[in-house]
Image (tube, rainbow, N blue to C red; front, side):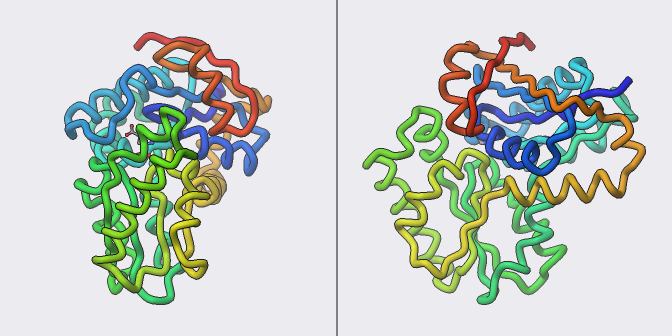
Length: 272
Ligand code: DGL
């Protein structure tokens, strides 16, 4: 039976990716799951992020999704490989789970002229060194500098991303990053929550620094993936429907989700 594309994030951030997916591939059905009851994932251990992510992926499989996108860097860094290699062959050999790190690192070197790029992410993503390891495969000469920004997700989740308080933490982390990589000309917002901080990040940087948010890159990569994998594309239903599930309260979710998704959202609660 055909089913929707599943999109998962620990909270709201994945909605920024889903926006780009829906814009690029509107014909498909989509099913979003935000684990808002357990956000943030960023500071949690490898084992916890893996367990939480696996539960959410299984839930999306139960909702009928043949393909799930982990629209969360922390989950992509800490859980994706184990799920792909150990769990999928056992629990769902015909289904697929894709992340956001590989599509980003495949492109990274094309953006930079100076040969220095900066990665801004959660503590979990940065400590995993996934971006450094993956980027080296595609662009061995590229210098990748990382900065963990643990305050940025709480700022966004709490609706403080336009406040003066946000400026303090944005400046602090950008200064630290550029102290290590003074020739950085490309910055990756390697957390799906961070696009909401884009105007403030831009305001703290010279104009010649390119800031990359992942939505369009992931959408392009999924378009390409579906062309290369017609056996998966055939399993996707096409009624342009969008469903939203949250592990926490739907009214709270709907109130904030529109900010990330760019249009009103009506969600349902789901227990894992
Ligand atoms: N949106 C997640 C990411 O892309 C991070 C949010 C969290 O810490 O749970 O890494």
